[in-house]
Amino acid sequence: MGTFQNHQSKRTLRESNSQLELLVSERTEALRILSQRLLRIQDEERRRLARIHDSTGQILTALKIFIAILQRRIKSDLRTCEELSGIASLADQALQEIRTTSFLLHPPLLDEVGFSSAAQW
Image (cartoon, rainbow, N blue to C red; front, side, top):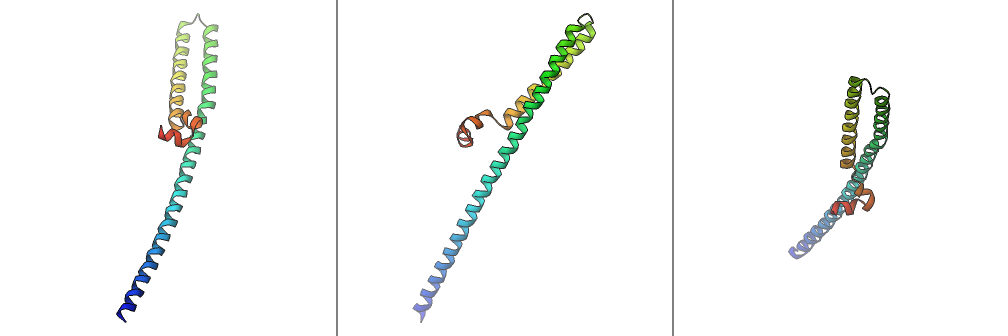
């Protein structure tokens, strides 16, 4: 009778082990899928934020053009020209910050070679 119980215990142990391995495998796969989804969502959000550079950059560039036009029109008023230069300098600073942030959020390398290659680089 002892041998029968011993075999039964081993069989129960093997079944339990198989069930646990299956559960771990299922959970690992679910975690992998969730991780991929999270990375994809993060990348999409970064792309959206990086696109802010395009629209805001265009607006700031247009602002600088208008400032240059005003400076030419009123070049006799040095004080106003200096103030406009200050405004143009602020626009340059904002453009640079937007470019830097855009690059850090979504480096162009991601679009060129894909996430896996960029991550390996």
